[in-house]
Image (cartoon, rainbow, N blue to C red; front, side, top):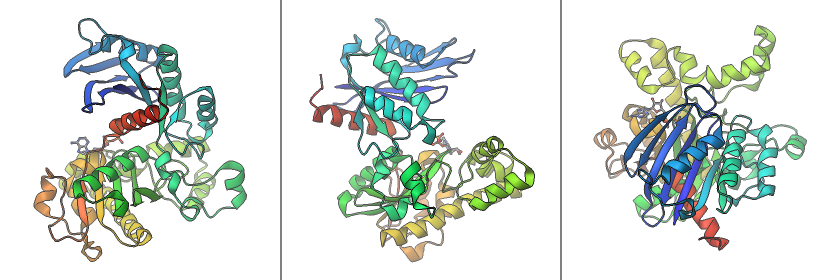
Length: 401
Ligand code: ADP
C-alpha cells in the first residue's frame, strides 16, 4: 500500500510518498514560494533529485505538478494515481472536535474551516491542500491527522486557564497543545528502543526546532504540554516568546501604543532567541557568536535552556517520577551543547548525561548506564506517523484498495 503524506504551509507543500510494506520513502519533495513569482520545487524520486523553477500559482497547481512528476513515464515512481491508496494530510488544529485522525468528507472540511479562528495561519493552507487533493484525487480516501489530537487526553486541570469558566464553555478557550504527531512518534519510538511497554513509562518529550514544545507523557498519553491555546505559549523559541505575564501584553499596548497586529508580529516573529540576541533565531549562529564573546547571544541560549529545565522539573512532578527524557527536532537532534546545558544539575532527578554518548548519539541513548532516567535522542518523523495513522483509519473503515 502506498500513502501520500501532504503537509501544506502558507506558501509551501512538503510531501512524501511512502510504501507502507517496508515504510520505504519512494518519493519526497518540497514546493516553495507558492503564489510568488519565483516558486521552485525539488523532488527526490527513488533518490534521484529533480529541481524545477517557475511560478506555481496556488496549492492546487503545486499538487498537480507533484502528482504529474511522481507518475511521469520517465522519471516517475508509480505508473498512475490509482496506485496511491490514500492521502494523509497534516492539519494543525483539530480543536476539541477531533479525538482521532479522521476520514475526510464535506462535514470534516466544514469543521476544519470553522476552526480557522483558532489557527488563522495554519488551518487555511492545510485546507487548501485538502481541497486540492480531493479534487485531483476524487476516488482516493483522504485522512486528516491533527497536531492537537495527541493532547486531547489532557485532564481539565491541565488544559483550563485560570479564566472565567464561561470563556471555555462559550469560546473553547483552553490549552490545545501542538506538535502532537511528533511527541506521539518519539514517545512510541523511545519505548521501543528502551524495550519497555509504553504503557509503563513516564516520559518527557522535548521537540526543539524553530517551534519548541515539551510534553509530559504517561503510559503513552499526553497529560500536559507547554504550547497552549496557540503555539506561542511555553518554551522560548526561535522567534516566539513563549510564556509571558499576560499583563505585560496590556502594558505594552498602553505604554508603547502598539497595535494588536504589531504586538502579534513582535511576539511571534521578533522575540525568542532572535529577540533576545538581536542576532539570529538559529542556534548555530548564536553558538558561534557566543564563542566570539557576544553576551546577548550567550544570554539568549541561557534563557532558552533555563526555561526547558524549569519545565522538566514541573513535568517530573506532574508525572510523579520520570523514566525517560527524549530530545527531538532540529535542535534536540543536533545540538549536544544545548542538551548538556539542559541536563546539567538534574542529577537529583536521576538525569545523568554521558558526555561522550551525547556528542555522538549513534545508539539514541545518551545517558550513563546507571542513570535512573534514560535520556534519548530520536529524530522525529511526523510523516511516517501520519502515514501509519492514515493506513490505520482506512483499514478500520475497510476502504483500502
Ligand atoms: P522547524 O521547526 O522549522 O521544523 P527544525 O526542527 O528544522 O525547525 O529546527 C531548526 C533549528 O535547529 C535551528 O535553530 C537550527 O539552529 C537547529 N539546528 C542545529 N543543528 C542543526 C542541523 N545540523 N540541521 C538543522 N538544524 C539544526
